[in-house]
Every structure is written in C-alpha cells, then in structure tokens.
Amino acid sequence: MNRAFNFNAGPSALPIEVLEKAQEELLDFKGSGMSVMELSHRSKEYDAVHNEAEQLLRELMQIPDNYDVLFLQGGASTQFTMIPMNFLAENQTADYILTGSWSEKALQEAEKLGKANIAASTKNNGYNAIPSLDELSLSNDSAYVHITSNNTIYGTQWEELPSLKNKDLIADMSSDILSRPIDVSKFAMIYAGAQKNLGPSGVTVVILRNDMTKRIPNNIPTMLDYRTQIKKKSLYNTPPTFGIYMLSLVLNWMKEQGGVEQIAERNDQKSELIYNAIDESNGFYKPHAKDGSRSKMNVTFTLPSDDLTQKFLNGAKEKGFVGLNGHRSIGGCRASIYNAVPLESCQALHDYMTTFCKEFS
Image 1 (spheres, rainbow, N blue to C red):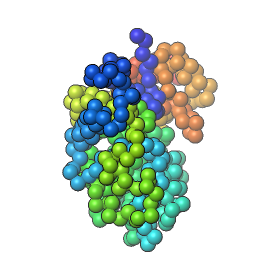
Image 2: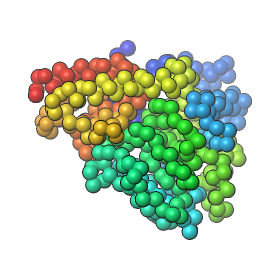
Image 3: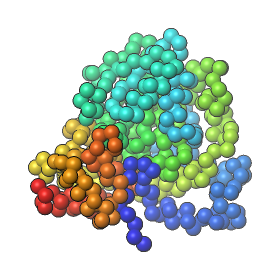
C-alpha cells in the first residue's frame, strides 16, 4: 500500500492502526451484525462507545471531576457563537486575544451578541508571534478571556499557556489539543474540532467547568444551550456516532503510544526536524513565526520567490508529499504535523527540503 506523506492542515492524517481497526469493524461492530454507522444512538452497543470516548479523554487529559465533557456538532465555528450567547452578560465585556484568523472570527461573533474587547493583537506584525502577558489589556468587567492556543494559518502557538487569576479563560484548542500535557484546571472551557488531532471531521469536543452553567440565561435556543447537552450527555439529538467512534479509536491509540507525554516528546522531535531544515538553510527558507512562538503543529515558511515555491511544491508532489501549500491568505508553504503524522514523514520532508535547498540556493 502506497500511503502519502500527509501534511494536510485538516482534515488531516489519522493513525494507520486506527484506520485498520475501523476497517476491521466496519461491517460488523462487536458481533452486532451492523456497522457503528447503523447502530441506534440509544443502543447499549453505542452507549459503550460514547462512554469509552469520554472516559479516555478524561484519563488522557486528566480532566477534573468538576468539568463536563461534551461531543457536539457544528465545528469550532459554532462555538464562536455559543460562547458569548451563553456566557456574555449585558453588563460584561468579553476579552479576545487576537493571534490569527480564527481568533478574529471568534471576536466577530462575540461582537454581534455583546460588548467585546481586543485585549491584545499581533495583527500589525502579520501574526508572527504570540503576545506576552505584559501586553494584555483585560477588561475590569471581563466575562471571559478567549485565546486560540495554536494558529494553523500563521504557524504560531502559545509556548506556555497563560494563567489568569480571577479570570475565566476559554481556549480554542482545535489544532493542538492532546499534543502536549496541559493543566485543564487553568481553563473555564476548552473546545476543539476533531479533524486535526482527535479524528475525522464532524465532532467538536467541549470541556466545560460546571459552575459556568450558572451564568447561562434562560432565553438561549435549546440546541445552543450547553445545559441541554450536559443534561442529556450529548445525546439530546442524534450525535455524530461514527465520528465519536473514530475519536475513541484515536484516544485508544494515544493511550497505547504512552499517553500525552510520549506524544509530546515525539511532536518535539518532528517539529525539530523541519525547523532545523529551515534554520540550516542560510535564509533560503524563512519561517513566518518568531522564535518563542513557533508552532509544533503547523510549520510555516517561504522560499525566495514564487517560482521556487511552485517548483518546491511540484517536486514534493512527485515524491508523495501532500498538503504543503501555505494557506491562501499568506502563501508560501506549510507542513501540518499533527499527532498522527509519523516521525518518518517529517524525516522525509527534512531530507527533501535539505536537498532542494542545496540544488537551488
């Protein structure tokens, strides 16, 4: 089987072991005579899948008991609306730290529903860095502080996630959840689309400290009220059952790999390989992100000219590399090296980048 070197930004690579397990169980899940896609979401067979996914996530992330775990639909983009709808009161301000396009979109949705404040932004510098805590200008009446922990387009990441006393911190971790150990108790809420580190697209994980629900007004539409899904364990309506099943397989795979600590160690090795190819190129490859803000999930860089960029991408395609085009808004190149991207793929990319640089620099 000829597998591609998959560096897609999302939907992205899945572990081969997970795909093989899903293939094995596709027609007959655990003797049911049905695929998981055919099971009733009220059946005991699916209930076991659902509960296992939650239990594994709690175990791997060491989620405290006073947090609810939800499996929702609508992607992280729906959370941009749900968060201010549920938690931004009329007499409060929502603080947003802008580090890229997705945090901008989250801010725009909050502004439609209430008062929002840009607590810090690196837009003037092309979103090439994460602001320091000294740069934050938080509101006195802050309802919450929103961050995007990793920025897929610009290739920046919070090297150290902030601790904000007396502030409810909410994080969009769509592109780096479970890539490194974090202290969940620092956050009022964490949310993430599944299609980068958790599984295929279609599931959004929400981890919500349960005292936050006391702030939710009673005029929220039923499906946009977190309490609806908490009360019904994400089963108020039909959930994305196959996506949650795939998520449980990915979480099982992560556990077998040694958990988040081992995954993080391998992610360090993978990102180091590609950043080394950039740093040792004498300026042939230029990183977008500044030192101290470099993402370990999305490595973004440019070449000396558009012609060389196209030549690089064409050559990469011939060698089986997929997804190395930079985002259309900034161009250049991007290697997305999420948890399921093998170390061998990153080594192959390092070698190709080094060879290409020697030939054309």
